[in-house]
Each structure stands twice: as C-alpha cells, then as structure tokens.
Image (cartoon, rainbow, N blue to C red; front, side):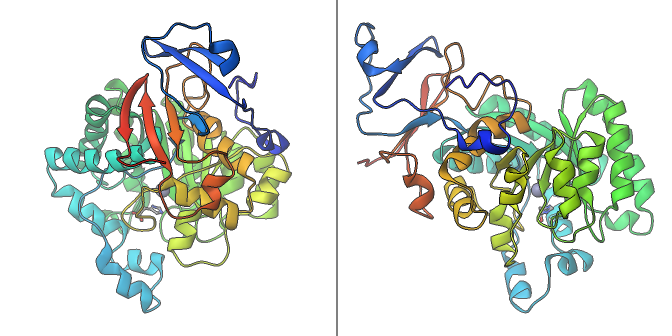
Length: 404
Ligand code: IZC
Ligand code: ZN
C-alpha cells in the first residue's frame, strides 16, 4: 500500500506495516485499479472475482540477491565442510566458486537457460515476482557475457522480472592467481560493452580475505561508477575487513552480507543511503553461530532487506520463507520488519522501488495470496511454502494444487 515514501524504509519505519483488514483489490489491464476495503469495493463490477476471505494478500516478493545462473552444483563439498574445511579454504584449494566457474564455462547457453527457468519456477512458487541475478561464474569475457545474456533471455522467457548485476569480480581465476589487479582491469574493460548492450544495471565485487581487498574493491567500484553503473558489494561476509563502511563511503546502492560489520561500519551504514542486504540463510548454511547484527543496524536507523542469496555453494535454496523464518529467529527482526524487508526495501535495493514491492493503484498487479490468515504466521511456521497463488501483472503464474 502507499506509505507515502519514495525510498526504502529505515530504522523505526521498518516496523510500520500498512495493512487493510477485510481488504479488496481490483485489477484492470494488469494494473491495480482499486485497493481498499471490501465494503467499498462492492460497487465495482468485475468479470471475475477471487474469494480471498480469511487469507493474507501481499505484494509479490522481491529477492535482491541471487546467483541464479550457474553450471553444476557443489554437493561434493559437503563432506569437506563436515571435516572442518572452511568455505574460504575450499576456495583457496581451487574449489567453491572456482568449481562452479569450471562448470559454468563448459555449460551451453541453452542448458543455462533451461536450468535458470527451472530455478525461477521454484523461486516463483514462493511468491517472488521480481529478483536480482548476478553473473560471476565466468571470470572471463566469454562466460561472463554468456551468463549476462542468459539472464536477459530468462527475463524475456519467464514471467518474473529479472534485474541483472555484473559480478565479474567474484573470485580470482587460476589464470590470474598472482595478479589480481590485472584481472580486475580485465573485468573493468568489459563495462563499456555491458553498458552498450544493456546487460547489467549494477556492478558488484566480492571483498573478502583471499579474494579482493577493501582498497581494490573501492577503486573497482569507483571506476564502475564512472562508467555509469550503480554499485553493490559483498562485504564482511566471513572476515570483518571493513567493507561495510567502504560501501557507505562509495555510495553503493546496497551492501550485502555484513555479518562481520564493526560498530563503526554499522554507524556509517546507518548514516548513509546504502541498503543492507542480509542473508541469514548463508550464515546458517555455513554453520556459523554469529549472524548479521540486524537489530543494531535497524535500531541505529539503517534500511535493511533480506534475500535467499540463492547459489550452489553457500546458500542452495530458493525458499525465501525459510529466510523469513531465520530473519525472525536469528536476526531478531519483527514480522513487520521482515515483510517490509522482502517487499519494498528489497525493491529499492535493486532500483525497482517505484515498480515493485507495494500494492498501489497504477502499479503492475504483482500479488500473492497466502495459505495464512495473518502476516505473523509466515515467519512462524518454518521451512515450508505458504503460497497459494501468485499473480504477475494480473495474470496467475502459480497455484498450489490443494489449498486451505
Ligand atoms: O558460489 O559460493 N559468497 N559468493 C560469495 C558466493 C557466496 C557464492 C558461491
Ligand atoms: Zn552473493
């Protein structure tokens, strides 16, 4: 609903969730033409009426951080993890992201499209109607461009809206092991072509021990900005390097993970317009005890969103409802904060705040009908799918077979 804001909700605003008891929505030509009480809606003459009595109805969800397009999978690394080999050690040994890079390089464009459609259908079944998708499993010109073209094609072929991010700086490929600066320059050299072909809206980098330093990341993102891109950053995911404050300093649209953000980083973040994208599913799947400090961030006034981080290594799940459960249990977010996080704030984190994440007259009718009679129920009943029906631009794109 219209909250009167044309930016992400921050701090205490996140705890305000506008909702209508006994509400009704009318859709005309794919757009919302009425939203209000069902009493007032009685005068509307409709071709088709969907009875939502006793059901929660929300905007389509937005997932602001996925690594949707990849070859292969990484279940073979689970036993290594069980033996205590860390995520970053697996990467150092040439596995992890680099294993997915080898698979993605040898997978055809058509196979990546088929695989992407499969995962998109599953993401859609959880009520997601808009999502961000990153490249980053090519680390060479041909494969990075292949991934971005696949994302463009998926956006055409699938009902969901995809927003592309260039994450060429996701890891240091074997070929550049001794010269990460030269590799970053090679990725920067791709930007004019990416821009010209509208293949990405954002540029992202993995700032982490053994990957790219804070200074390399800062310079890389500044150059990407000069090329006309908005920037994102994987920051302080595993080691606390100070990427959080750097994201605020370079004016990143969003900073992702932030598990190791320092007091200073949180302070800088809260004073900036950078949106914190928190990924509790990843922390859970990496087997860590310490989660991102969402409470401190929100209480100090930051804008926060959450995401699946869907990827084959650190978060192999499309289940955004599980992420909502974890946000409640581990990030100590309130149901109101969680719903704002997966709708309007997620949309702003990918520059779609004026299109997605709110139910408003004049907007595309991206609507989810839930098997729940109140919004507290979804983060509470954990690990399962609560969606009954999903509509994109007024058209039904998903329906559960047996519903309550
Ligand atoms: O494939 O491991 N953190 N990138 C940075 C990832 C997780 C995805 C992966
Ligand atoms: Zn990521």
